[in-house]
Image (tube, rainbow, N blue to C red; front, top):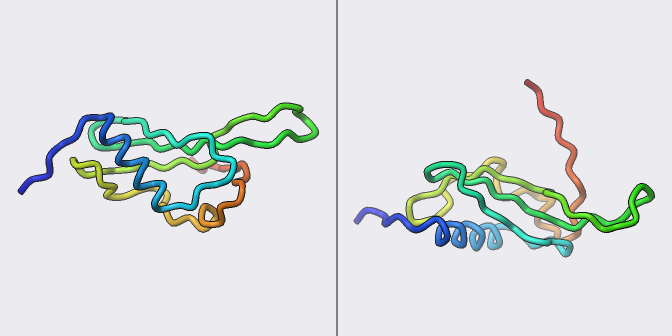
Length: 104
């Protein structure tokens, strides 16, 4: 039997549920959001609180991890980039801000 497509809201909830099962939630998590890019491709962002440092006196929130997800019509995750089993997410400790360098 073919998989039944879900509404975007249902798919969004399903993706976030699966993400939460794959990772240990950081203590400073604000939210996980799933944004439909097109068709069955989603951008999932993890927003976490960053602690004040010597440059700032206020707490801020940043995207600390982000995945590009391809899901099946029923909302099950088919693949993700980067993979969801990133070891730094398994600790449950507050995540650090990531510095990414892109080569073009």
